[in-house]
Image 1 (cartoon, rainbow, N blue to C red):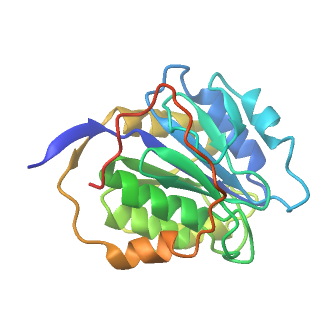
Image 2 (image 1 turned 180 degrees about the horizontal axis):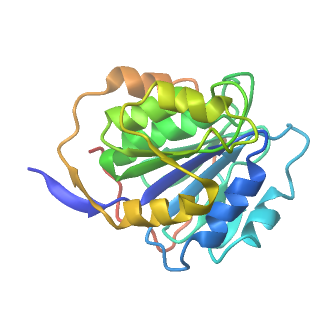
Length: 231
């Protein structure tokens, strides 16, 4: 039986030239946004430690580096740590030293695909400025699983490769200028997304979670999203 839920998982990918549109996005979101945001920005393995502080100051939503095993909660921004992939597993955040993808770790594809598996139609993928094609496969998976994809207008992106590649593999992605990204995300979060019982996705699950090497961490207790189920 189908049920309706708001879109409460927002995953964001950015690379070269993506920090400023990311800050603009966070600045425009409301403090009471009923969704969790998870962010991958390509950073060197030895750098990026200040990124959570920069994003925490960017807007009203608290941002912090993701901690392996912590519960996924609405109204929070989870930032991928350097040299770790960021994923969602049921209702917790996981960080992984799995193989590099697109030559980078963290990469957007593992995050987008794990979110699509967990949230299905409740997932929103946002692709910002960047080089190469990271987030393209993830965007296609989000759309195939019933989610929404929003892409920064490539015409105004400092580096248009990531937005253009995401558009090339999706059919219904929404193109927005930087100044309207936050409004588009807030509107999509407020929409009701119809979910249905999960279709078999063993191959996709193996591709997403099979290569991951999770550090051992026990989930901490605290307010959570409603328990996430496959759509």
